[in-house]
Image (tube, rainbow, N blue to C red):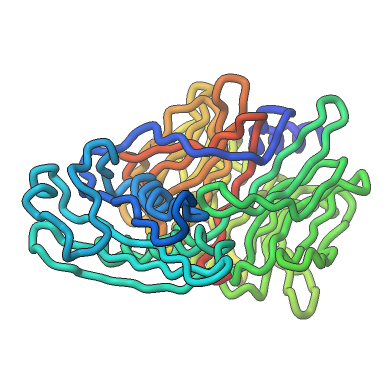
Length: 431
């Protein structure tokens, strides 16, 4: 049993005790090869002396910048601040090197109600390429800014944006007797809401395919138990409480099944749980430790971590059963594998010379690329468009969440000023 928990401990790579949920963004790298864009502060059409409830232009600018696809013009360098496409001086913006600009206005229409108008303007072609007009309540303005960011991103890149999605993560605070919390927040770390609080550890949050539920492991009864919980209502259901390990839940792409690790038959193996029938079926049978299952996007097979070759490496096995096939060979340690939404890549924790970093394996070519440069990087989770990886890492003695683009050119951190955060999970689109 000591070997089991030693390896499970390595797989988790948890780095600290004093965790809180408040998060801010620090963009650390990434302008090379990006498209220049300017997001002009929106004009305010409301009561004099007042400000709009949300700086929507600031939210849009931050979203586009941390996507890794755009470099944004600082407001201090703007020669003018147009609020409509007809007010744009194309010569000035070309001089500043912007390919596109975003302009807009916020109009107060009634108590707590606003009309937001946004235009995307192509500077090189001197024409408006998109325009939006939205009525919105003040409490929904930040969410609307994320939605507008998604539209702009898709218009300019041809790819779906992922700004109007959510992340889940776990915190703990309280020193010797910590309180553990499971949080759900916007993709940029704002609007964090605690959906579970416990004096005992919480681990391994995983989103359902429709974004309505989270599965996780709780030790609230002094033993590992696996739950699924409805995010909106807090209603939850106990899935598994066998003797030993009940861990690493992973939802199938259709949301009908859940893969997990169970050890009630002595060795940790991969099992599949059918949501409707509540039946378990064993997928792997080995004296080794098999853990951390992840579904392929087409649901044909399960990726998992195993030490059956002597050290933790990634393997895959058909969902209907069969002989596992080893996937990774490079490095001393490869674990916590997860597929990109399109199935072209596998992200993982890659260990070599006692350094643990996030790596990306191209499935077709089997080429591996190291994306991060930390010593203790953990828990990679893809954005639903596959462009960004969110992961946990250490900054000094503090645990933070970081993100890196799949090409490695853009990085940013989501930092808690008061403590550490761990085990991020990025939601799907459907929510």
